[in-house]
Image (tube, rainbow over all chains, first blue to last red; front, side, top):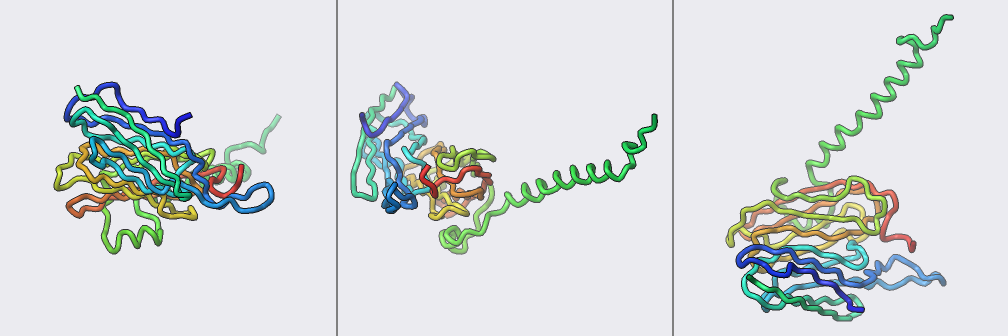
Length: 106
Length: 157
């Protein structure tokens, strides 16, 4: 199962903003919970998530335990050229993730 | 048959009427208070003396959240924007969460439509503040109040 699901429109008109949605599979562990034996579960949230469109950073998000598990983000990007929309993220445990969608500009 | 006990001026009826009136009154100040920003130390530190204008930012959260673990949140900043006066960042602050800086979204490139949607965790009923910073130094903000029936963050369920 992939770690993320990215949704972009099948084709976008040049110069217009288009909607991008992403859901990353991640527990966003707050660090305030305990396991069955009463030991506290260490915090592990996605600290930062960024998106590059044709190599240019279009959004860079800093997240915290205040973002729900399986973080979801929806935002807009201005269509320029067809190309990749590349997401990258890193969590507190140092685990890095990435996923890419391709954008077709009509 | 006389029914003296329910005539309009009976003490019981007047008591009921005043009870209804009292129940309605608190809503008016609560709505007025949503127009200014709550006192959040992290927000004060972030603003560093700048006075945000309470305009153009629309922060949408449900008025009543059944489950604080996942609450839909949407921020829209009304344009039009120019490259000189574009939105560079949106910061979200929480009044009662253990981590007051909920999220920050930075826009290094010019986007003419600023709209961010996500899902947040809320530890208690509280007010959330969205601050939008523009490239020309303008700071805009908006607050939204959410009543949370089951708190997020704290418990394991």
